[in-house]
Length: 415
Image 1 (cartoon, rainbow, N blue to C red):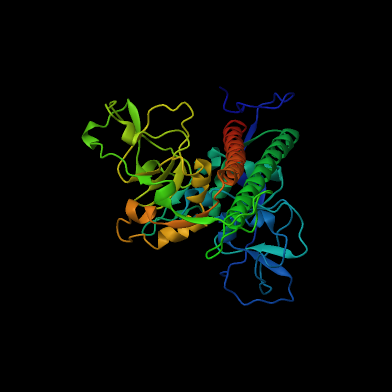
Image 2 (cartoon, one colour; image 1 turned 90 degrees about the vertical axis):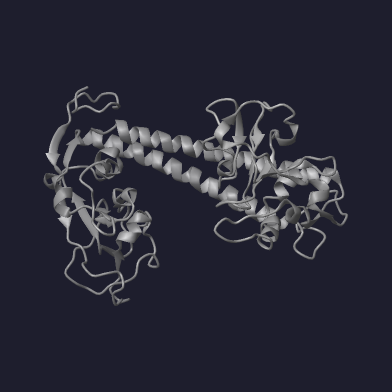
């Protein structure tokens, strides 16, 4: 493939791209040289972009005077719409290679500061350059690990030597606008996902009785009875797993859920080990929608839900607890209860801290909670949270797909 032509292009553009060093396409904007902790002057109306703000993707969203502290006047240039600001040092490789862009004019002046490189495009489109800096092409360019602290760094001279391969201005504009729309769509899905997670957290707090109370703040219509106390062991006892021998792990067979497979996001995943099928294995099989608990290790106390819609054989390893499905309670309700703050707060009281934190089945089975006497009310609550979880999972899946799409376009739309 011709190195002057990207893998993906918009229709109507056929010209080979040009190549020049960045210093021919941008001007450097002089930064404010002092650290963030400078004296402030509220009368200047001038704000300061710190390299830490770039790492947090703050500088492209500066809209209020609370974002960045005021600074005193000095020998620097103020930033304008379209300027780009890069951090020149970071402990995080991805952080240093991700710039900020001033997208809009603000009601106050902004300058770049400590450990930043500010650039003003003059012969190249700002958004095109911004996404080029976000692409793997620039991320692979010229970064060095410093000695001692192992900090990634890049100098202004190396930045300006970067060989930019670029298209006509009209094609640059199309690329920039397209990627900005994609990024906005990702931000929208991220916002919706965060709102769903906040809603779930609020419902978990209001649809279960607070400590010392027997009715929740929010209930479904038609249910008025007080909730009754039950020990967890009476309605969904915690079952321990089997001590599979690691010497017999294989690359195929029956997957085993170990502590490492109980993920922070509430799912079961990661790398599985496998075992030959065992006779009389019903005491360590995990069914679909099983709520499992990490009983030791870094994720001790984390409860995740197993997705096994075909009910294929999946084994339960030792130190992985399974809240058993009984006729004494609706299992969707139990799955919700053991992921609520009520359960988490109770867990903290019995957690054995140390180099290898752990909890015991006996302690957890003794946890007492108020729950509805009515199976129907339990089912309403459990189904409500299952639907909410499904919505969160769908939004997360869509967000992951969009992120992968963005990554692919950043790889294939630049040269």
